[in-house]
Image 1 (cartoon, one colour):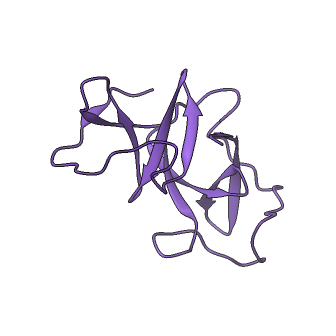
Image 2: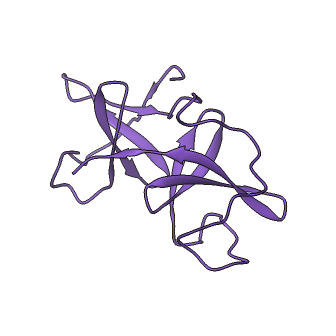
Length: 117
């Protein structure tokens, strides 16, 4: 995980019933909110996290990946309909529990994520 920074002025309380998608990593649950991965600290401070690049969530190019979860030709981006997920030093998009990364004329598979129930 990269060094998190504080999300100033955050007035939303994240938790299992907050309406945001929860992703488990590093022993805790963070919540996707407006393209950020928010973690609420014990003191109530909200920090922004990024999923680490790892064996489970690599950042490699996978041109052979068949993109289950959306139509052929779909292009991921800010208005594509999939939630943005900070991953390493880039942004991926959450599609049916795994990370898609737009790359040229294809999208890379950056692995499954552990979704909070």
